[in-house]
Amino acid sequence: MKPCHALCLIPLLGLSGPSEAQPLDREQVLDGAEERIERHRMSDAVVEVVDAEGEPVAGAQVRVRMTRHQFLFGCNLFAWDAQPNAADQQTYRERFADLLNYATLPFYWWSYDKEPRYERIAAMAQWCGERGIATKGHPLVWNYAAPPWLPEDTDTILALSDARVVDCVERFRGTIDRWDVVNEATDPFRFENPMTDAWRAAGRVEYTKHAFELARQASPTATLLINDYRRGEEYAQLCDELRDEDGELLYDAIGIQSHQHWGVIPPEDVWAVCERFAGFGVPLHWTENTIVSGTQADDEWSGSTPEGEARQADQVETFYTIIFSHPANVALTWWDLSDRHAWMGAPSGLLREDLTPKPAYDRLMELIKGEWWTEEDLTTAADGTASFRGFHGEYTITAVVDGEEYAVDAALIPGEEPSLQIVLR
Image (cartoon, rainbow, N blue to C red; front, side, top):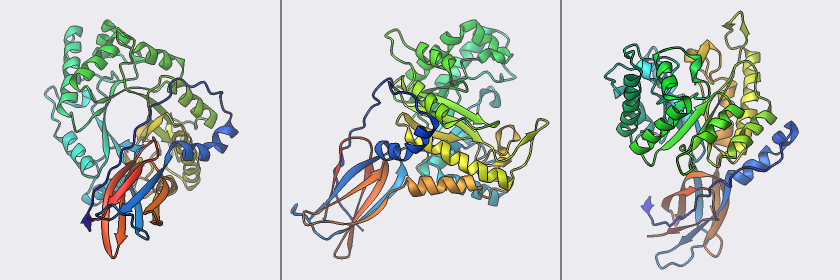
């Protein structure tokens, strides 16, 4: 395959600001999804093939192959090295990389010693980087539990927390550049521990703002998220309060959780959440999402069942389709990949405990790498051009002329129709 030169300048469109659209009912949300996906997640492109003198080449065979979505389809990667044997370890990692392009890595403070060792995180991040999987650290500040070695003095706890925020963001700058900076700040005082005492002393909103300021100083170009399990007005109020002295938002994206263990969120309510937080004019990340394939009785979860798996697959498809159809959303992260390590022991994985795919995994593969994936075989016209409409993401485009292949890598992102030129050299 011979090298060639290409020019591909595609401006990235920003969000338009607060939404003034009227609420949609269930039927409108579902029936309009396909059209919205086509409108918001795809763009037209033109490939031009020319010879070394710049003359158009007619009849060139052009292969358009998508290699990566711009949209972040993710999962936490907490069980990356937690499988009981090498075969399962390989299976887990292959299932992850085959489907997903985004990984959440664990930074729970209470799980680290006073002098933290980050070799495991570095290895996970390297594995992701080698496979084109984007990464996010989760979380920098959360008081679900406190490290057992924390002192009683709240000022010291706050100083240690500040140092940790700076250390994590600086240490992994360039490797992990997305962070859930503060987790569940709408209701931090439901947990009683020394970390909560420190947060209470500093002030709920004040402490949250301070953490964002520290993270921004540590990495000015990182994507900083606020993240919460609440999706209503309490969270919207917090999002509005997190501003600097000039009134600018301190975060770059809003994280939204949707653990749907006890019933799925109705489509119209999912859409309403998107509309509510799209009004802040920043991208939305659905950061922690679950739908189960079993039932709960007497506070115990049943295992995954065939009926539950069929239901889960349908519900997962609906949920992903709605999220993907709203232009404010840029990421959707599942929680967890398999039932073996699922939160609360619920059958919420996309894989069973033996790591075989559930129908939900297969259904997502059909969507993410099928229905929402672009592969085209084209032939250039007399003017040397061939057109296609593709999903936003990364591509390898190859022109075949007289048995020789000329390939370029390209990006298709929202903006004006790009013109991609392949020069035979």
